[in-house]
Length: 510
Image 1 (tube, one colour):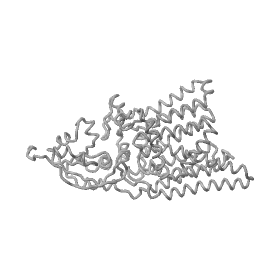
Image 2 (cartoon, helix red, strand yellow):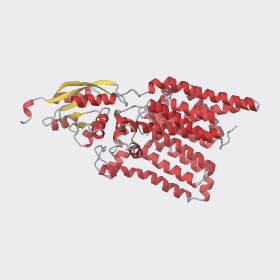
Image 3 (cartoon, rainbow, N blue to C red):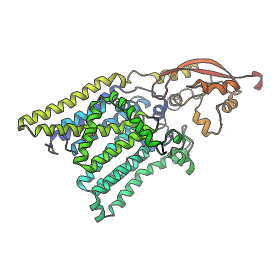
Image 4 (spheres, rainbow, N blue to C red):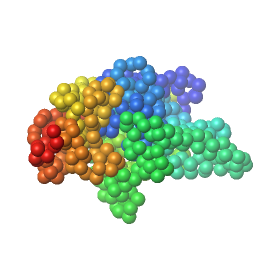
C-alpha cells in the first residue's frame, strides 16, 4: 500500500530526517582547523583560490558563499557546510524512496540509518567535496524519477543543470552521467522523438552548469595566495581539471582494472559490515534485485551506479569516501526490500493488522538506525578534536622570525589556513611539495639552497627516507616534535620538525 502523495507524513518525512541528521552532525562536527585536503577546503574557498586537481570549482564557489554566514570561525563554517550537504542529501533520499512508493516510516528509518553509516557520518563533520557529490547524485536520481513520471521539459533541464554543476564539483560524476543519460533517454524516448528540441534546452542548461569551470582561470588570473599550479593557460587548466598529476595512482582505465575490481570484492565486505553491520548491505543488495524486477530501468541505473563507484574505489587507493554513493544505492535497495516485506506481510492480513505490521517494520528500521548511530558515535565524533590548532600553535610559536618551513601536504593546509585566513605569522614562508614542483625547483634541496643564507630553514616530513638527500647536502638537527595527520583530517602521528643548516657555515656571506 502506497501512502497518498498529499499525506502529512509524506510532506514532513524529508524535513524530519534532514533536521535530525543536521542536529547530530552539528553536535559531532570538527570545531576547527583540519589537515590535508580537508584543511585545503577550509582555506581555498575563503581566499577564492584554486584547489588541487581537479579544481572542484562548484564546491569552492559554494563554500565561499557558505563562509559568508557569520557563524563561528571560517574553518567551522566550512565544516558546517558538509553537515548541511549530507543532511539535505538524506532528505532527498527520503523523497526518492517516497517516489518509489516506500512507506514514509520505512523511508525515514532507512535514510537515518544511511546517515549513521560511519563513512557518511565522517564526511558530514569536516570540510570536503564528497558530501556535495553525494547530494548531487541524490538530486539527479530524484530528477530522473520526476522526468519518468511527468515528462516535463523543466525536469529535464533542471537535471541537465545539476549534471553540469556536479561535473564541476567532482569528476566521479563522469561515471554517473552515462547511467542517468541512458535512463532519461529510455524512459522519455517517445517524448524526445516527438519533440527533439527539448534536448536543446537540456544541453544549454548543462553547459550553464559546466561554465562553473571558468572560475579556475579567472581566479588564478587574480593571483590569490593559493592557486594550485597557477592555471592561467589552457594547458594549465586542462592539466588541473583532467587530474593528470594523479593518473599514476589509478588503473581503472588499464587492462588490470577489471581484475583489481574482482579481487577487491572480498576485501570490501569487511568495511561494509564494520560500518553498518551485515543488515544494510544484505538488505540493500536484495532490494536492488527487487527494484530491477519492479522498475527495470531505474533499478538497472542504480545497480550500474553502484558497480561503477565500487570499481573506481577498487582501482584508486580504495579511498573510503568513494563509497558514499554506493552506500546511497544500498540504502535505496534496503528501503525497497523492507517495503517489499511489508507488502508481503500486509497482503495476508486484515486492514487493522496490516497497519500494525507496517508500523512494526518501520519501527524496526528506526531502531536499527538508532542502534547504528549509538555504535558509530564515538568513532564519528570529532567535536573534541583540536589537533589542527594545536599543531599550528606549536609550529608558529616555535619558528623564529622570517623562517621558512618545507612542509608536507598533510601539514601544509592548516599552516596556510592560519596564515592566509587568520593572519598569523605572515613572516613565515610555507613551502609545500606542490610549490617545489610547479615553481620549477626540481628538488627540495635546490629550494633549501636558495634560502639557506637568507632565512632560518626548517623541514617536516612524514617519511624519514625523504630526508636522505637533505641530510647529504646540509646539516639537519632536531628542533620540535609535533603531531600531524597522515591521510586524514586529524593528527595521527608524531613527527619532528628539523632545522636545516649549511654544512659549511662560512659559505654564507656576511
